[in-house]
Length: 85
Length: 140
Image (cartoon, rainbow over all chains, first blue to last red; front, side):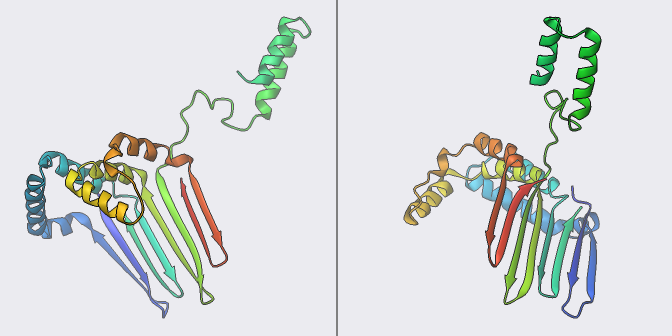
């Protein structure tokens, strides 16, 4: 499971903004929303006759595979870097 | 077996060289080989962990760069997620593809085939070179 996410934005004036987001506290704060999303996903699975357990398991696997993802975009003097650890 | 090593052993069998000379020749052969080449067949090769997409562009004289690193594990998980797409959605996607002139049947694409594709991605490198853009897709 991802432990943290780092967002780094380099503004045109050269000043960087770095935001470090710890995933566990964010997940705890957003847990009601996450729970609601899981329930909606479960209902959607039942509506489309897809195994709820299999779908949730696969979704969890996708979340667990996120660490190591890195997206780096530079354009002129602006740059955005997103890293998931 | 390595061809040169086989030649040495043949020469030894034919009595052209002594066992000591054969040993020296094989030792020299191993020294000349690049590191890891001698055990290539026995050691599992280093598996790639990430898919990299690097795009370098020049727009109005200003350079731009997109550098994306995606874990291959995420692709594998995504393939499993794709296997959960309901048949009616695949049917609609097929109809859309047909309308766009791409007669491709997505229902024939099995998750095992996609997983095999992801497994062999580490041997793939795509490079596109244009005057104003360069795209590289590879695994590392």
